[in-house]
Image 1 (cartoon, rainbow, N blue to C red):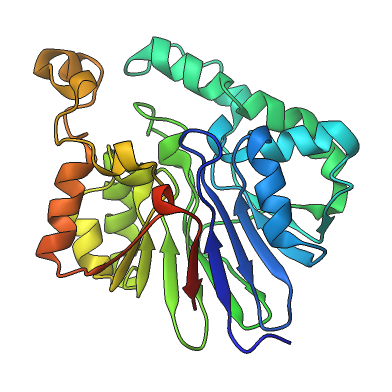
Image 2 (image 1 turned 120 degrees about the horizontal axis):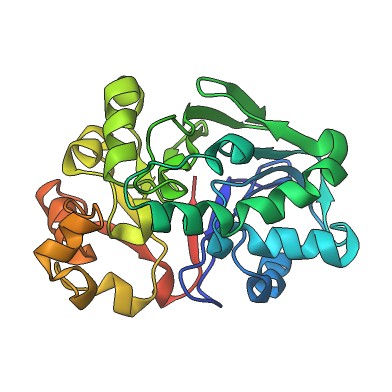
Length: 288
């Protein structure tokens, strides 16, 4: 038994990775994503020999779930004691046949990055694989997990990021909202459908804090603290970094509402957030 629920937000051992381990009072784990293959040693260190009651995969991008896929291909996940793998990814067979999407070249590249790799191992997960639905509530020990958002048809400009699972984990003391890599369009849908459910004590900043959901989403969450899954150079990124500085290019690539972390940090200051957990400074230990 542990006296408190603990969230470990792991530091970067590869660029852009997102990896979380929640240890419950019963000494079980909830794992979120995990990062790339090179991030697995650190993840294993924090899991130890604990039972993983739930491993949540937010979306099919390599910096979030390729480590999980690699571990399966290496030894069938034999290094982990996993009860359930929770996910909900877009329908690859259908989406791969779409011919007219905004910025189609990017769409094709994005849906092929990691999703086919996951689908190649899904059957092997057997009964451990669980495709969660929007609006569903699951529980692990003292943690209640409410899934507020899954992929939506028509969100094709930023397909994988806007397919991120959004879920709120509530303990007897705190609530933390995970936004995955949700972008502006996905944030609009989340706000429209579920704004009455968003209020949380802690928020994981969408898409590492840049090119993410809008201010109205964060203002509705109204967090006391923010989790930034970001190396320091990204945490200190300007409002318009070089790759976003050209307005015509942003318009052509459907990136007109995507900005650097400087703008998101201004939003948090306006909302009065004083506590920032930045993984670029090292693994963050957060009591829930």
